[in-house]
Image (cartoon, rainbow, N blue to C red; front, side, top):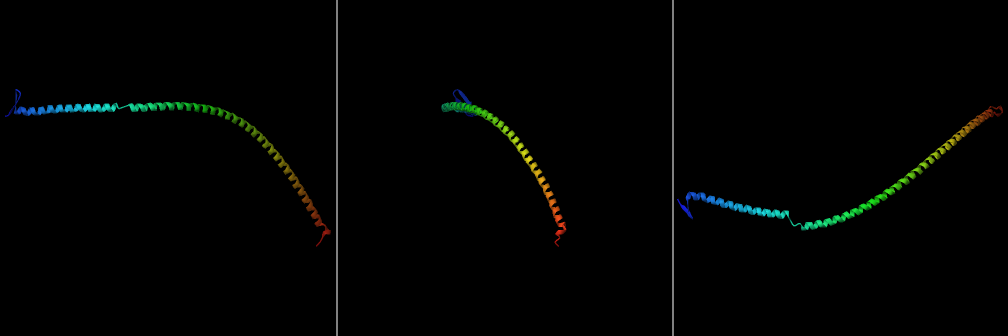
Length: 167
């Protein structure tokens, strides 16, 4: 068998067959470790860039938005004060309208009572006139019947008169 001499060490064929894959495994493991280490460094750099991006633009936008919010807050406060004043004025107006409405209601009730009384008086007067007219109509009817009876009696006397025989 063949022997290989490395330094003072002699390696025979069988040992070389075991040694070559062992050296290949060790070299492959080292290469894999270095590759893994490099990938971890790349990942760390990517995470650092992702987690800590440049915040100056965002900070500037936040400052502008803070100013805008402060201005809006001031506007809202002024509008709130204006609305509060308007609501107070509207409440005063509403109270005045209620008072006026109460006065009008009282006046209308007075007019209604007066109207109802006038209506009753008018109804009573019309009823009295109607009663009087009915009484007069009955009297006239009685007089007409009496006159008709008298007239019929006279016609009958004339017709019964022997001097009036015109046949």
